[in-house]
Structures are given as C-alpha cells and as structure tokens.
Length: 347
View 1 (cartoon, rainbow, N blue to C red):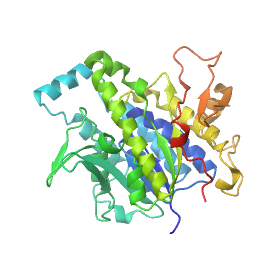
View 2 (spheres, one colour):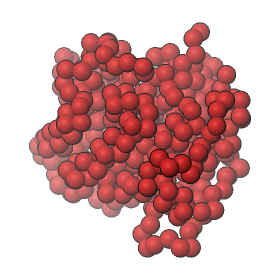
View 3 (cartoon, rainbow, N blue to C red):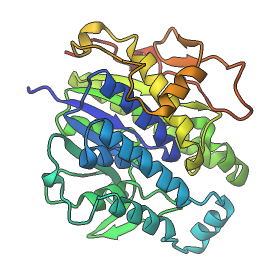
C-alpha cells in the first residue's frame, strides 16, 4: 500500500488557532501531509492550507484569516439569545454569511472544486443527521470546496443546519470531531491528529444550561475519539495523537485570543515532537528557532514561554510563568490513556 501521511485537524472553534501554531512547527520539522482532513474549524485550517499553500506562506494567510474572524465577531457569545433562537426555531444566518464572506474574500470562491487542488488531497467532514454518519466532502472531485468547508463548520446554534437532497447537515463535530476514521477511509497509512477538545471550555455553557448538555457533549466526543483510535489500531494505521489545550480554556466563540493560541500550539507541537523517535522525522535540520524570517509572535513566545517539561505520558504541559501578565494564557495538556496512543515510529 502506498504510504499516505494525513494531518487530521479536529474541531474546537476559536481554539483552532493552536492548530495553526502546531502546523508551523510541523512544517519547520520537514513534515508535510499527503492528505488534509478537517472537521469544523479544522476544516477551515485544512482548506486554507490546501488552497493557499502547504507552507509558511499559506500559514501566514491562515493567521490573517483568524484576525478577520475576530474583527467580524463571527460567533456571538450571547448564549441566552441562542438558546431562545433554538427554542423558538428562529434561524440566524448572520454567522453563515460572515464566514462565507471571509472565505470568499480570501480566495476560497464557490467555483473552486476539490479536484482542482494540487499538491495535497483535501477532505472536510460534516455530520449528516438523517444518515447518522459523517459526510465527507472531497470524495467527489466535483464538489465545491466552499460548500464543503461551510457544511463542516455549521456549528449550532450559530449556524443553521443545511437541508439539501435528503440530508440534514450540521457541524462535523457532532459525529467525528477528530476525523481519524474519515482519514482512514481516504487511504491514510500514518496520521498526525491535532485534537482541540477541552471539557473545561464548556464552563460558560454550563452556567446557562446546567451541567447535563455540556457533560453529554464532552462524553460523546470522547467516545467518538476512543472508537476511531481503536479502528486505526485494528487497521494498522499509526496515529500520533496531540492534545492542544490552553489555560484558561478558551470558548469556541472567543477569537480575540488567537495570537496567544498560535504561540501555545507552536510550543506544544515542538515539545511533542521532541519525544518522537528520530527515525520517524525527515532527515534534515529540525526546528530552527532563531532564524531571521520567523514571525514576531514566535520570537515573543520563545522569550515568554518557559519551563517546558514533558509528562510521563509523552504529552505536554507548561509550568506557570512567574513573569506572566494577569490573564495571560499558558498551555496545559491532558493525555488519553497510554493504550489509546500509538507511539510506534512512523514507517
């Protein structure tokens, strides 16, 4: 079987900025994907790279897109208003229009088809509630890329469900928040999976709805992940799982912290790779931290983020920073159980 390295990018709203930082570290290490598979904000990140370039220039455009999402107030944090909209069956299309305008302005236009993308394969994952299974956009090369990414990012209650041709489509996170299984279906033989799920991010929602719904959503997401990891193991697909979290946790709608999250994701990924067997990395110089062409946010992050240590499980954490400003965001990670994480060298 032909080798296929897939970057699998999970959903998590504004926390997707950590994936952008992590991707920069992966690129610096010489790791480039053959396949990009994303759910929700992960679909936006994957699509941005596929269209703009799987390189540092593509990442810079992706970083700019996060600024646009902050400026547009893409996801309104008024949870009570959304709860009322859901109960009253009122549909709010403002977020949908804003997201689509941002993507089109950035060059992801309606006429671009998956089959037109060169140098990397792309797939975005939505959830078809009528069929009860993930809907993978990109299987058909004639699919619209814009339609695929918008379907994957249809997060209720900010985005109204898509009803089309016997399908009832919502955000892919409902059925495959970290789309490992879709990546396997698409031929992945090796996977680097960047997970944004963070149970602590439901705190504000709990205040509005009580603990039941947040706990249910988190439990379903963890169950999905466990099953998809088991499938990968059964199929002999190596998965390098990376949990990206911040302290404090960031709600899905809060894009104003994206610059801090870029730094956290970057440092988290570098630290994770430091524990990987050398034979699993490309034979070239790794992680040049002090080059002239680095973005200013990386240089600032290197100065500010200290005392990186690796946990026994091989994930990452950061000690508290004595010189951190009030409210400054630092990193924190909690691993899956050891038996759920495949740490074999990628071959």
